[in-house]
Structures are given as structure tokens and as C-alpha cells.
Figure (cartoon, rainbow, N blue to C red):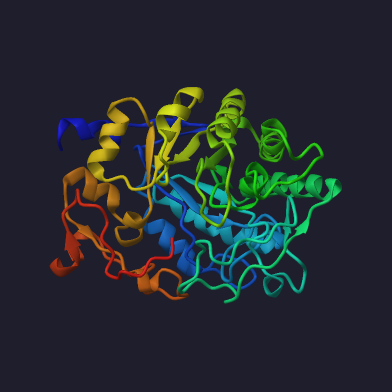
Length: 382
């Protein structure tokens, strides 16, 4: 192994645990749970196969029924879901791995058909632009534009914060090593943060401090119910996916990151999704704790970011879909398997648990280890 890659395979303290390497499996929703949100045998096997990652961050888990936005995604708000996730975490731990559960409330990005007729909730009654970029192709959700959500009352905001708190309690019960709040991708915490989706004039909207209050309250309540080392946060500053916009993302996220730094959370997952400003250079110095960078990294660029002292850990998404033994391939310089996008959001084993390890992979499915992931299909859904 080349010297500059060695740091990527050194241990790292993250919150309450120490992980064996600096490679994380980034959260990726794959729609393989039951319709009522219980993880299945496929989920158990999928995560077990990838336990050589330093840290697995699970797919998005809805903390309440109203947080659900897609079919076949998992939840964490009842006993059956806890038992299902316990099977997953046990399998990962038995294989020597570590796993955080990503808590994801979609807010306005749901549909009454997903919510037994109820209207999706949001900070304000702002309909997502139907022409904006959303998950569409092959994604199990109603094939129609998002409707107008219902603005949460003050009491309902407090109730949703409590749902995040309770999900952390249940995650601990289910054996997770921690939780990660999904405050990116245009989901509910980012809807509160963004100036075009949060038009409130009460304590939850207006100034940067008030728009950040929902996310920080969730963090505080989850920490109080567990510990600072059990809670992490994912942000994607300035990203406009799912039609969220911020008048001044540098100011918004500088405030958010400074506040998260005060709380001693396990880590901050920070993504630069094509912004025209230096997301990492601007925000990383504001956070006194482990930082995971994500989006578009290769083995070489990951090693460079870690060796330069910028990132403590790198999250890999599509590369982990097709390479359950990605850590071993990166360590030894073995070629990579290309993922098949057509199977990303289907409900079976194909494209989920049937990707072989390197020694069993057909040569025509391989590409050089340091090349960016090149899927077998040109169709992309985000």
C-alpha cells in the first residue's frame, strides 16, 4: 500500500466508539424494507457484507409516520422496527463493524398517498417546484408533483422535535452506535434552515438563529436522551436539490457549524455538491470535532483530504453499492465493480446483496480502483 494511503486505514475516535479505518459507507436509501418500515433479511445481509467500512451510516430512517416519503423505506418509531434494526446492528457488530442510523424526516417531500390521506407537514405552506430536481426514475413514490404542505403549528414543531428525541432512544435500544440527523437534501431540517421554505415569523423562522433553532433543538433533545457522542449531523450547505434555496448559505451554515461545534457531537458530515464557494475551506475550521467529507471522492482524493488534515473520514456512496469489500479493494489497489443503476430502487436481492467480492467478480464489470465510479447505466436519479 502506498504511504500516503496509510492514514485512511488508521483508527479514529468518533463519539463513543473508535472505528478501525477512515472509510465510511455513506447513507443510501435503497428501498428494501417492508411497507410498514421493518428491516428485512436483505437489509441484514446488505449491511453485514459491508461491515469492513470504518463506519456504516444507514439509509434514511423515518422517526415518525409523518416523516415517511418513500415506499419500502425503514422507520424507527415502534417495537417491530426496533427489533428489525437490532438484527442489522447485531450482524454488523458480529462482523467487526460499526453503524450509525440516519434519522430522516422528509417533511413537505411526502404525499397524502404515503400518509393515509394526511397532508405533508413543513415549516411553511410552500409547494416544491415540480420542475426542480427530485428523485423520480425508479424511485418508489407517487408519480405526481408534490403538493402544498401544511405549516406546522408551534406545538407541532415541539412534537416533531420530540419524535427525533424518541428515535434516538429507540436507536440506542436497537443497538446502533449512534444516530445521524439528516439535515440535507431538502428534508425537514433543511426546510427550516432555507429561506425559501421557511417563511415563519415566530421563534422558528426569520433570522439565521431562528431558522437554525429546529435543527439545534433536535440535536439538544437527542443528546439529552442519549449522549453527545451518540449524535451526529449531516449538512449540504447551499445545495438546491429538492427546491431549497438560501439567500446566504455561508452565513446560515457558518452559524449552524459553530453551534454544532459547541455541542461536542460525534461528527459532522459535510458535503460539497457543486457549490461555487469553498464549502470545506469555509466551514471545516469552524467545527472542533471529527468531520466526514462526502460527494465525489476517489481513493486518491480521499487520502489527500485526510493526509492534509482537512477531513477525518470520507464517505463513499455508489462505490459501496457495488463493492461490499470496498475497504479491502482500496487497501490493496484492487479494481472496482461498476454499479448497476437500474437496480438501485428495486425491492429484491439483485443489485443489493448479490454484488460479489473482488475475487469472484467478472473482469468485464471492473474498472481501475482510482477511477470515479462509472455506473452501468446512464440513468441517474440523485
